[in-house]
Image 1 (spheres, rainbow, N blue to C red):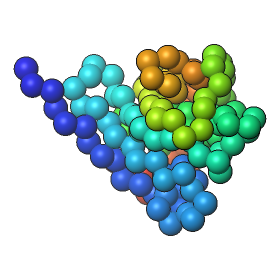
Image 2: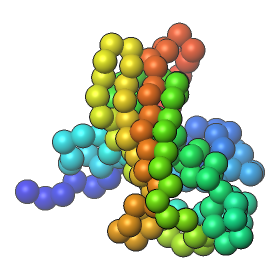
Image 3: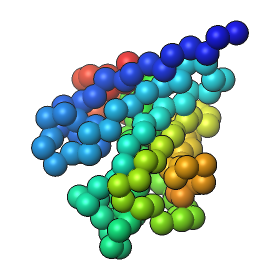
Length: 148
């Protein structure tokens, strides 16, 4: 069986994480891997001086924002228009600036209007940051579909 090519997800305007219209944005490009049993959304990028916290390392808030976007995109990709209600993160290793990293997010499960997602930031093969998110289905807040 051949591996399917990843699908590039659309960006959305002025989003700080992935919008091309935001001059201060991070410019991440999201992909979904279609040949896995769960919806896996990912991006490969580098944190830069703009996202610095401790000298030479990414700010924890920048890691948090990227993980929220990855997990939220996975839930949106499943068909739910959601907002984040709660996120819990574990910082295992500092994330160095100007070093290739990969962020991944996936849907864990649904329970009524609640969707639970998980995610991680990898530096090489090591998990630097991992987290979980609780997202609430709130379609009345949106007139568009980010990740269709």
